[in-house]
Length: 99
Length: 167
Image (cartoon, rainbow over all chains, first blue to last red; front, side):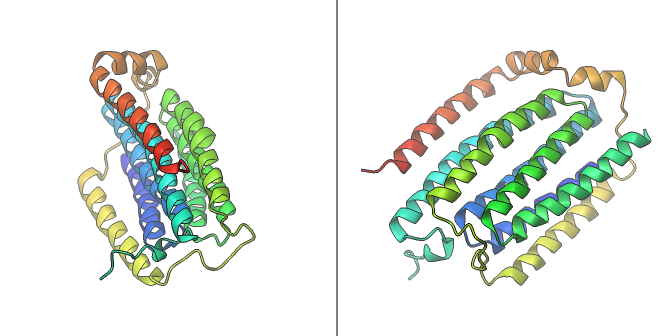
């Protein structure tokens, strides 16, 4: 199989994630879009591991899965704090630093 | 060879459709369920690439833990579960332009750099993804990053508890 098939599928998923991060207002949905982008990177790493026959790519993918789990934990705690303080999960409301 | 090709294209179409569902769905719980479909498709792609350990870690961590965490987040922030139009902000068309631009640049770059390169499915590839092989590599070559990442996970857990605690 062509290496590019995997890489272009991953690019499509990554750009869908970019769209989601920019266009979504709800904090939980923004975090979901970030997960899409992290997954796209993981597909790249595993495809390159198969291409180069080197297991390092798979190990990197495992590390990224771990970091993504940590990121979701902290991110959801932050969204929860925003909700508790502003009574809304919308990230547009977080504009206290605007002059 | 063609079986892998067919499986890949089925997965690719399903994953792309589900990813659009994640970013376009008007119901936040449906978005989380579409995310499950994308994550399961990625796990199937890892199986296709003979990375069985990564695939099962993906199923356990992502579909098992992260999605449950998302559902808790949806419930705790009292998101409108019945379908609501106020999940998007008003910069949707700007986001479409940015996304398409990045996609175009990436595809041009990938075709230029890796056009014609092939993944060869051999016995070496199958033995590469074996759990024993991955485990040996983690605990021999990558043991220091492994310990660092466990400390990071601990710090993130403590940080999440501290942030979410009610004083």
